[in-house]
Image 1: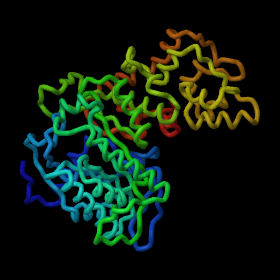
Image 2: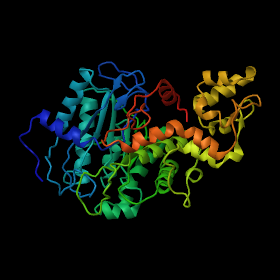
Image 3: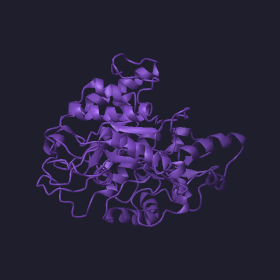
Length: 457
């Protein structure tokens, strides 16, 4: 496994941008920072992502690996040590040059920088640190930067890098220690969780106005003191490479949110890029529908007050193929419905399929001024095609609805069955876009776009 020393920058970029495509832990920045005199760029809270906005505007990060050379031999990874693939590595100056030139051309609004492990975790982390330091203090780049923390690296290196990045992430890779031992025996779960804890504690200290001593490298000039990872941290889990159920995946994600204060857990449908007897065959292709359901359930846990144990259990460990998790939960708890829109509290409204966070807040605010009807709810963004089976307004249902599980299920399955088939049959891999509601072949409808923007489920 030798690096190609004679490559030009364009050839390196082609290899290392392609090698980064399986890392999906990349999303909106979550940080707002104004431009500074004498510097280039800023960071906008909602919009820096490797995706398309609702209006069709491309808002992208330069997403690359520093190197695809790696000392590890993880069975699921295209960049594993034993694979015979073209190898390349940037220098810190080359990453700076690409970032600055792409930014000036308005190609990007920030940088997502990950890496294989070159020589050792410390060596690689130090190269990432040098890159960010040069961007911030030699080139005056004030834009958004998301960088990976390398498990096993010196905590001082991770701390120094955290003062230069907006977001950091440490990929959990596989949800259980057993799965990691099987497919990535050279990695250790405790070494992955250690930098997560460090980043969590550093963020908490920053919020209290404390910047722990020793994080700034001696001999390096810091024109201004930055915040430590102001946009928080995230992680990624591979879905389908090992035998864990949806319930296990969701329980791990819930524990990460609760114990490590993560901003996001990303789910990456396993893509079989290596011929290995320990990897699943996947005759139907990557488990994209399963990934989609996990994202929906994750949204319910983060914004709707659901817990993993409410959506799934050991007795019922996997998601319904044809119904989204919220509808499936509602059908299993029909005794709690219908909900009266004029009197239900905010938390109860959130559990009604078709009512999102914004529409629930609008209902609570609007009903103080008078009575509401179903046309009013629709104007507030409620997706009546789902909500009508679980909601009353002024004591009335919307048309002839029977509170019967089979009847409601049959009614809901009309569009959902087609969508589920489209997701499951999709035979190509690509990153999940922020507004396409999964991997669907048909173009999203106006209702789909509205639901995506308003967070309606």
